[in-house]
Image 1 (spheres, rainbow, N blue to C red):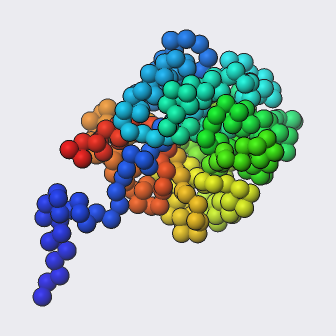
Image 2 (cartoon, rainbow, N blue to C red):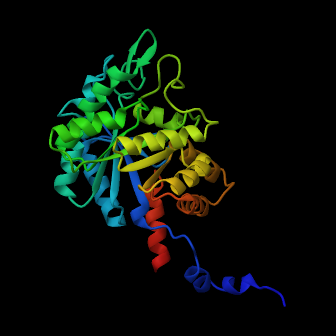
Image 3 (cartoon, rainbow, N blue to C red):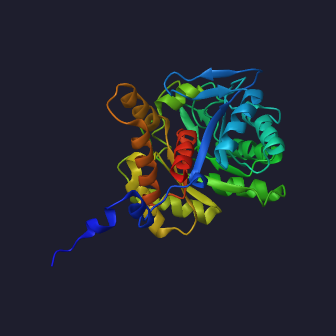
Length: 324
């Protein structure tokens, strides 16, 4: 007798009822860039289809996002003023803080996440306070605390420390609890690798380092056990969600982390991964929508619960089509 697995592949309907992994709109988190001003919608050249918004134009974008059924937005800010300590990052009237207030007022059901890092707010472009060309860990924690607290005060549901400073989750949990924000969650960029895939983001957020690199605080690309260690530490310090970044090139890390952790697992499908697919599609080398959906489904299959992706709107539209 021949074993015939193909029996279950004979039609679209048959394949769909035995599919093991399903991508849902609720899995998607849409990253947005916000800056001061009015009527701003600036195209990001290295990320086709992505923009920098002022708060008023972000409102229009949010209307579309909500109609598509996307439940979560992750906000990144561009500084109107930069200095060596990133003071604009915790300005209560900064672009991010105003964007949070707008979304929670006009779209109260949207889960608002905010990136907590000062690379876009410092004049040197590093993710913390610098002395003698070295990022100072413990001094940076105080700035991250102030930034996270300002986001919580504006109404953020989840703050996401991404600076890769030792102790950042514990420091932020402490300041939030001290100020009666026990209900605000922390999504930790736990395994954030020193990747070559962040280039387009640095254009989008104007956050490129002005000297050196970020290898002394972001993770070495060859390390797996260190990623598990970072994830374990963040959970012990109070992280409610942990993240692996980038996503596509680190699916093995996602899978291993999922096996050992009971907290939700997020992955960041980063700017370079997005740009590569966009560029290949623009040249006619791949079917963009098919590759997009295959990649996102693969991330879900690897163990990701939340996928932060610039493809969120396009993917949500494709998921809706599949229902029809």
